[in-house]
Length: 277
Image 1 (tube, rainbow, N blue to C red):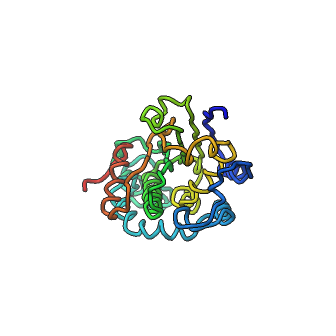
Image 2: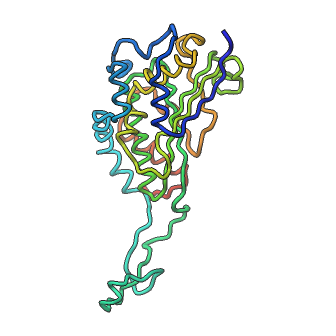
Image 3: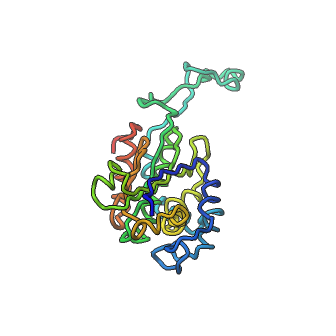
C-alpha cells in the first residue's frame, strides 16, 4: 500500500458533511461500529443527523458550563461603551433637536487593543483514545465560551476544526517535521469570521465525541488511512495554527474556576483587554 500524506481543507462546513458522509470500501470502519459512550452513544446515522441539525443536548451541556463561566468572563472583558456628553465624536440627532446639552456620543474609556480584529482559532480534536467523552464535552464548552467572549469584546472569530494524525509515534512525526512516512490532516472551517455565532453547530463540532470518532474516522476510511495506519494513527499537531491554537487542554474534567482562568489567559494572549481581576 502506498504511503498516504494528505492535508485536506474544507472552507464550507456543509461541503465537508457531504464528503464525510460518503461510503467507503475500507476494511477498518470504526465510524460505523456499535454506539457506545466512547463515541458519544450515537449510531452512524444519528451522528449524521446531529451534524446537519445541531446537537441540542450538547447545547444544553454548553449552557450548563456557560451559566457559570460566561458571566465571569464577560464582566472582565473590556469592550467599547458609549456614553452621552457635552462633547464627543458624534451627535445624537434626537437629543440635539430636544436641546439636550449632552447630545454628543463619547466613549467611556479608550480601548488599547485594536477593535474589530479578526482572529483565527484552530481547535484540534486529535484526541487520544484514552480521553473520556466527558472531558471532550467540557473542553468543547470551554472553547465555545472563549469564542463567545472574543466576539463579546467586539472582535470576529474564524473557527477551524483540525484533526491531524501521523502513522508513527515519534516526536518528529507527530509534530509534522516528518510527514513523508504517513500523515493525514483535515482543516474544516466551522465558523467563518463574517458568520454569526451559531452555538448549536459549534456544540456538535467541538463538543460531541462522534465528531472525531465517527465523522473524522469516516474521512480516514474514505481516504484509505484506516487500513494504512494502525488504530487510525497517533494524534499530531496542526500545520496551520492560526492566531490561537488549542490542543488538548486538560486530560480530565476540571473545576469551572480553572476553566475560567484558562479562558481569560487565552484572551490575554490575544491582547484582548481584561479588567483587573
